[in-house]
Image 1 (tube, rainbow, N blue to C red):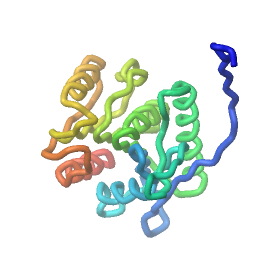
Image 2 (cartoon, rainbow, N blue to C red; image 1 turned 30 degrees about the horizontal axis):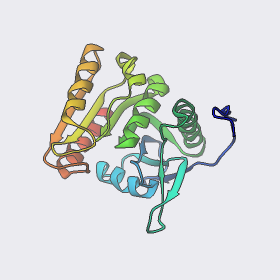
Image 3 (spheres, rainbow, N blue to C red; image 1 turned 30 degrees about the vertical axis):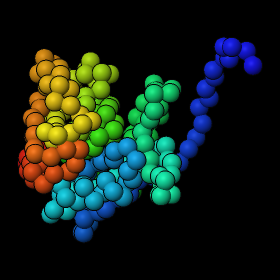
Length: 219
């Protein structure tokens, strides 16, 4: 084999999986669209969306990452991307999120607002999908994940953002939170921060703050 093989990529179709939990009644409903963390599933994330929406006032949509793999226990989980072909994966994920939004609008009775939710690795996906949705997105709620550099460049165009971080979170550091706050503030973005005692987790304090923040988005 030559020392420097030529790398090629080719676009290909694949099937994504998303779960929908609709309130009772005929609608229309606002949309809570969520993106799970690394090695999680749409089912796991849907449970957290339910905690944020105890009155079940929102159409809950939990989107599963396109890249599935097995844990050592042989459970199927997923991720959003790796460092390999990162830019292409970002484009694929944005197209995927837009396709889910279109399918939801076609298949369910929906109304404003639309809010994106992301945990851990899914936080970057929530930021990107929210920015890409433009005026259709009324808010972005993220927990345990940083502001991507590609979004930070357009942070002034973001809708209101709620950021959550546990004081003992080893993956989303205090220094990264400071950097994100500085970038959002410099861009004039509307954001708030909820810090809590805990680590990389959906702590009750953050869930309560997130639920109140979502109520304000509807108001």
